[in-house]
Length: 382
Image (cartoon, rainbow, N blue to C red; front, side, top):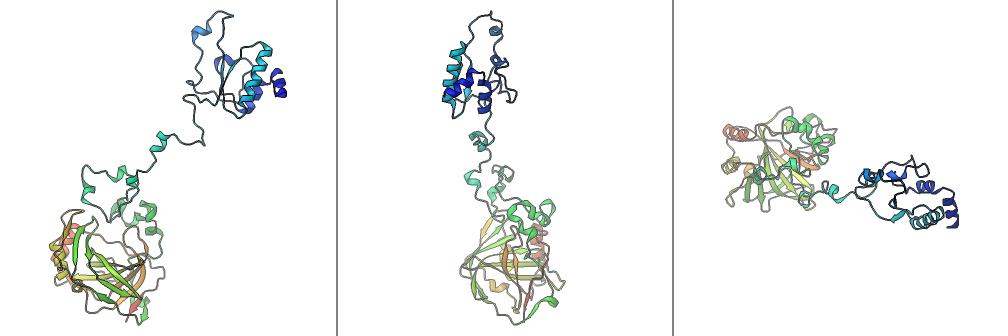
């Protein structure tokens, strides 16, 4: 402390303040050379207001108010004592030393915590953290009074089958959709018999019963949600039928041939793994199963219609020839999740042109283009 006082008496106070980072600007009273420090920026005007004109014009010798220095440092107490001793020796006015006080309007530190008001604008509301499924659109979402995705940065982005939000852009709409662009096991694919793995394959063990179900228009297709124990057993695992839906035209192609429609029967096992049985359709005789679903077709996006108990029997959807192509692929809609077991039945079923026309009025095209196979093995069951 004695050493510090000696330095202060030798006129080192300004340098010491500058070194400690304690000088908070250059108020009007600190214009003499002994206290100026060009290395420091001026504080905001509201923190160090200029001296009023009346004070500047006061007569010489008038009592000057004691200056205020705002010191925010671990050595503040030592400096205060040193300043008081230095001023006492020189006969100058004692500056008032404020320790740990913060000035109104002082700029925040670049590394300090953000003010509550600014952080609030970036905080995700609790209700916005649950991201709705892209197929989980409800009628409420289209209400004029419902919040839109434009106001909720956490809502699933709009995707479609055409335009700027079409299949070519799915991978860029949201980070969780990136597999749609970079995945190596994407669906659908064009299956060519000349490149399939020929040989024996286990038969599909299917146990479908008359079930309870409901039909919903999810904005991308007509989907039928199934209740009951409808199962598919393959590769040593039993999968339960969860839902089926339709694409027009069919997403799959076989030996350069396209089809009018496909039904994707989505199954899930106890481990959460998915297996999709694809049933292709060509124009011809009316489909009994499709007739039942179309009769109860919802009228609007999010609209859901319950089917009479026991009305739906998916055995009516299956061909007599149950030979199939098997490969590992993905969901054909965002987020394009991979690791899905695909079972594409070789023999197509039929639907009437009237049934096809009714669906195409709602969904003129809801098929994802075929994706590169990247050398994937496709097993052809013989």
